[in-house]
Image 1: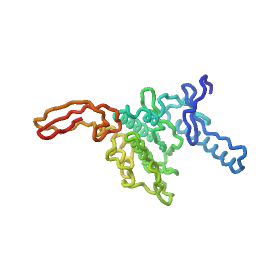
Image 2: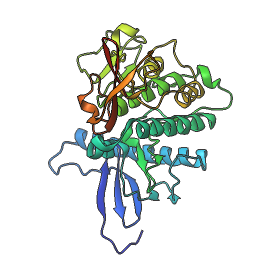
Image 3: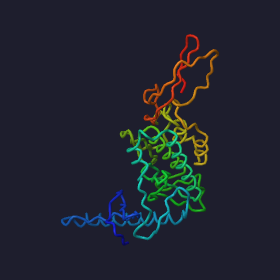
Image 4: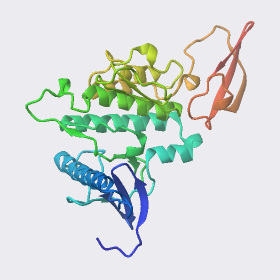
Length: 315
């Protein structure tokens, strides 16, 4: 393609890269050149890797074409066997935005993003596509800070003769796997910590040395998962993770749509006392509260009430 602006590398993954040309982002397969002194066996290995990368790009293009226009999924400008052209979104990925603006992003905005992402994944599932690689790095932000999902390299198109709810791919991708990955994305957005897990029945024993990424032989029990009791939306995250929790993205969407949009530290108390007097009203940073939420830069009203010998802070 032609563009007056010089190319700029804006993304590099295992199988592909994304170059920016002005207002267009172009994804192509990674094509590496083997060292000149490489053995024939090494050269064959490199050639095989390049073939896999090119097949991966073609597959992603097929997924975009299969999806058509889905609200919340970035719409490619052009798809071919060698490249995928997309609009360039200047705000970048959700992961990058959270790293740069974590202190200024409140819990309501985080909750809205998660609602957007959940409904987008639900729509993708309705098109009989399993996403697989659900992560903050694969959600881009447009000029209105709305999410646009991208990267379907590892996605699976489920044929019409398969039961979507029970389908499991050769790589163990399923509806429940997508839900669990979304739970990990929620955990990162709300707590700032990363945690993901995979279930591979073929392994001999659990691979759980890495605190952020684990591989289990069987679906993990609640005891093997991070404690989310004090995490914003922690109950929903836990139900995404556990085997007998949410079984469809529709259930996840319903839970998020009806959830409180503020962490416990910001909720108004429902307790009312007889003969209560307001003795003080002040503004304090949320980080100074006993249980700060993820949006620690927020300034919160604190109303201090006195009833007899008792004093309580109402947010």
